[in-house]
Image 1 (cartoon, rainbow, N blue to C red):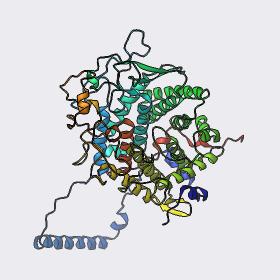
Image 2 (image 1 turned 180 degrees about the vertical axis):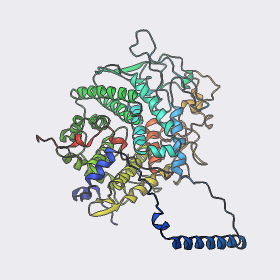
Image 3 (image 1 turned 90 degrees about the horizontal axis):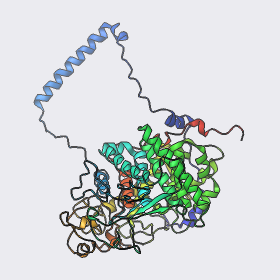
Image 4 (image 1 turned 30 degrees about the vertical axis):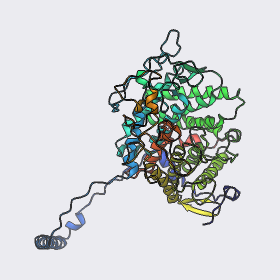
Length: 577
């Protein structure tokens, strides 16, 4: 097949996909699949024919005699039934999740199972006159001790999305309770960063721990284990200029409310807080001149719709104005690249799901159709037949155009690709068009597998970029806690020697996906070079999502879970329109 540019793809009309029947769509939402009752076998008609019964009995007796004779005379080979073989993605799920345990801040929960970690930063927020005295908890962002609510919220949203779609896969892997516990650790913490008891939000904490430019000692300057921090950690409060954070936090709380739908009271708390937070985001957005938060608004609004079933949110996220502000029609070099810094591609896929399965009518259909077509174009751009994004010789797609930390974007793309293929299969659609060329859904799975395999070790370096997975993986991860021995209490500047040491980390931070290679597949396992060796919450959340989506250990897509708050009647056309 000839290589095509994205401009050529966009100029060609995409063939509309076949819609599933109304009966099928409603069955996915209204009720679970009902197991068919086994038919009872009646012998009344046979008992009326005695000769037939005698004949059948004779045949059975002769068959038994023949079978017994053969079993004694024929040679036997004794085989042990091999255990079920798990694929690499399934095996890597618990490994990748363990990174979140290593990043826990506050008093460690029971069974945290990271031997070199301890309670840390228990006094976060606790000082005279503090408006937020309960800020112990949550997760450290990366290799330091800063807790930033923006990447943390996105990470919780990604974990929740993967659980909503693939809970049975988590269950088969034995990790469902684990991942739900990690999500709840994050959302419990987020609820303490604003007045979650109120229906109205006027301010929120955005970050704990100071960086460059703040008074020394601070969390960027010092190289020490968070367990040993003995200086005051200030936090930043936002009042007017953080609509992106408020919208992302709303997304985290809203998506988690679906995960914990069986915990009615907790889920309701999450929904109520998400509503207040999203309203806060909208109020701030009207006063902001920057355009960098609109993708967060549309992303958060989509999750608000799925969490509440309220068509008000659906109307907002399907408005042409918000879509335009979010960049849906820009098609720049980062268009279609999904990550913590741009949520548009994820939102388009989320809303494409709604169109494929439920087909909302006017006035939502027009923009949903546009999102569906745009999702198809994004998926085309991920394929090796097209040239929007370069690839390394080893096959890694360079979604951030050769900049550092490419793995997190590749993992996110792998997750979205598998999701879209599963959405198409679940709606009885065999594939999609890239211009005039038709591709089957398996092509998306092949792309996803290629990226996951690269991350797990199928690359020119023959190295797994996930610590603790495989025989060869990075040993000098840019991480304060992992680089300093557990029994060595160091001062702020005293820890620098550990940062600069060429020795391997004394503590293995299992599950950490490092930043990754450069655009030439090159990798340098150097602690001081975070462009290669730093691991992050956002990176690992995308990795976990990609792993569970591509795993073949059992289970599949949950077609109903995301629609738990939506009823078919709520999507009926307004009789007055």
